[in-house]
Image (cartoon, rainbow, N blue to C red):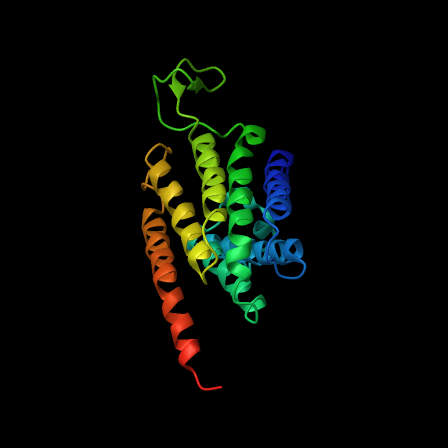
Length: 224
């Protein structure tokens, strides 16, 4: 792993830890270990999915698995992360809501880590805060900084929501997907980016918010 990527990962981990310290109400047991474990599993699955989608066999090319800069499938990693968290916290119905703000802050840290990797810039821009790549005279949007700010603000917004099952978790999914979708147009991409995954994430988040009260009502009607 290149050191600049490692520093970006550590920035995400550090801000996630800070988020757990700031928003510590109703957290499950060992929340930091829980997030790190789910993230590692998601990273492996996302990397394997990216390799297969690029026509590279993980079986014949096992060494490429650790080359994370070669790409991680966003959708597969996100689904794996959420599935791992759901499984590990299946006995605690408020766990995902409690973890949601810290997760958004960790994502903000990952995007802010672009400063270590010199990978913050996107489409050309004439805005006063835009800057140019080394050796270039074309100023560009600091799109990853935009995403980091949006995710951090989203973390504070989600943390201010009332406690209702899946309200915070669903809202965090909408925020994370929405921020990525809004900033995707400013990222250099041949294919336009995984916008369908972001739209799907927003829809899934809305479904979680809507399904929460129904789940509460169904449990309250269940015979004891």
